[in-house]
Image 1: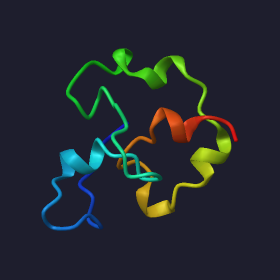
Image 2 (image 1 turned 90 degrees about the horizontal axis):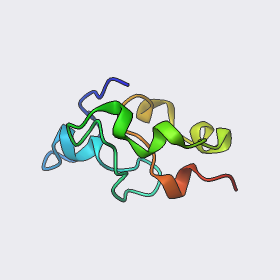
Image 3 (image 1 turned 90 degrees about the vertical axis):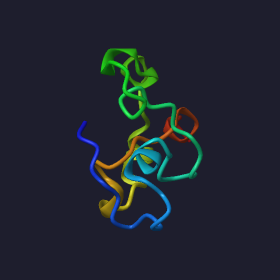
Image 4 (image 1 turned 180 degrees about the horizontal axis):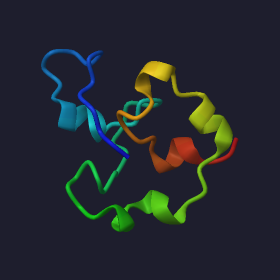
Length: 75
């Protein structure tokens, strides 16, 4: 995943902070990549993300930040 600067974030929110925040619930997403750790160490590598959670992401939010484990759970 490539983390891009979030042009929709308020000016006082850095791209790194936006990348570490779930775009659905706005809580920390615990993303290893955003924290500078190896991708293999991220919780999402061993998780199944609900397709409806991914579909809930607005197009403008895709590819900028990961959703959190709670939001990624099936409904």
